[in-house]
Image (tube, rainbow, N blue to C red; front, side):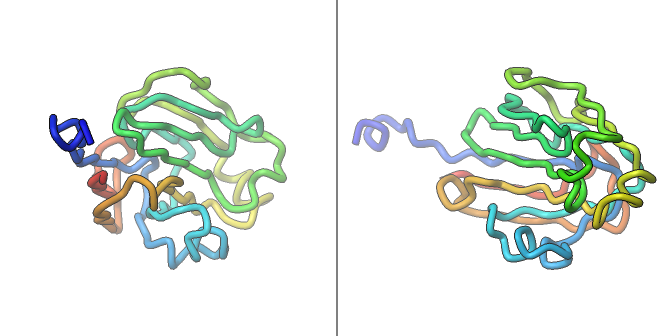
Length: 165
């Protein structure tokens, strides 16, 4: 009640940039039902052209998976974002991945998160397609606007806008 009375419940608009250089596509195009059916949340995906992953948003790194194939970031407004490099990459057990951040680090858009060997991932995993998911979508998102691009530049091109509840 106090939040409503004193304006503590401010909606925030978050702008996300591409975490990888490549083609930004709908989750519908991701060849994995966990992502295409939005079981983990909503977002977009990038078909990368290189193996450099940067932060799509300002926030705190909350988790870097031990296999370094995924990283979770939480924004100041509470949006939780998962960047999941490739499909079925967990089975690579970290081979070809190098992390540049740790849990607790604060990042800005464009800050390096992970680098990976594109050729090795292409060879050993199902796909290099990288979903960028809002994992707490139902709890925090009032409005979601994806932005698809044939050619997006990591750390620069806008890929989605989220307005929090």
